[in-house]
Amino acid sequence: MLQRLVGYAKNCNSMLVDAELERYSRQIRLSEIGIEGQEKLKRARILVVGAGGLGSPVLQYLVAAGVGHIGIVDYDVIDLTNLNRQVLYTMADLDCPKVLRAAERLRLANPEIHIWPYFQRFNKDSALDIIAEYDIVADCTDQFAARYLINDACVILGKPVVYGAVYQFEGQVTVFNYRNGPTLRCLHPEQPHPLEVPTCAEGGVIGTIAGIIGTLQANELIKIVVGIGEILSGKVLVFNALTCSSYFFHLERDLEASAITGLSNYEEDCSSDESTILQITSEELQNWITGGKDFLIVDVSDPANYADHGFQCLRIPSFQVIEKNYLIPRDRPVVFICPLGIISMTVVSYLHNKEGFRNLYSLKNGFGRF
Image (cartoon, rainbow, N blue to C red; front, side, top):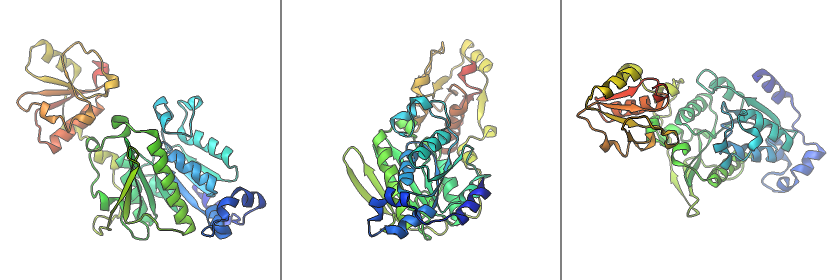
């Protein structure tokens, strides 16, 4: 597919036909855009990583503006919790791959745009090959592992990144790596642990903030392509939907932090090292319970997954562990449990490595098999 995309983009006619002159007439009338700017949009190749809350408005406005070649990377399927903010989708799309449904809707909106869906994992093995075929990348993801992968790949390839992030009622937008400007690592030099950065699934998000930030991302993408206005490089715009207020903070390029020469295993950077974490099987845990051992069980699963385990336990959702770690004793064993054993491993890893706990266990394979 990548070779086909490159060949097509190099040989395509960027001249506007009559239907395009009519479709884009309102923005062509802007002196800052005009015919030349519209032709730049037609030639442009933009990759959108993430087809969710931010990706939905970004994709819709890029298609509406006439960006000629758009790639979409996402390996997720649509579920009911997406629909409050992922406005590309409907109830009829549940359980369908986001990229495929997004491509269908976008082609209906503008059949002249060439959409390239990538329903595959975006990882260190695929990132450089995919990004290399595009001019600009829109970071519409919601995980720091993906954000650092995008940032580092774009630094290596010399591509700008239009970054957006949302949480609860607040959002941020900026442009990284634009003409040797600041990168994500100038803002956060090291990838944070998952427990240090709550996700929208954990902390919640109002749908409109995704629309606002995604639209601002699309605006920056269009400005970069056409070459107009002041690009949000070197400063981060923060918008609060509750107060309708915004402010900027400035950012300088850190040469040392931005000296990226290769990609690492970003998911592994966030994951637990099983060799250093104490684990306990369901049989061993049952023996502890029936044997009257002095220990504490902590359920760190999402409240939606709470269940009656038949034994007493302390309930602390994983996203509250950092602020409530004072509830976790250090003088007796503590067993962390969750449905699959993955979240509990992450929690134990964080408390072990960051807080110095040495008395913690993770229930192997989770309580789904208990």
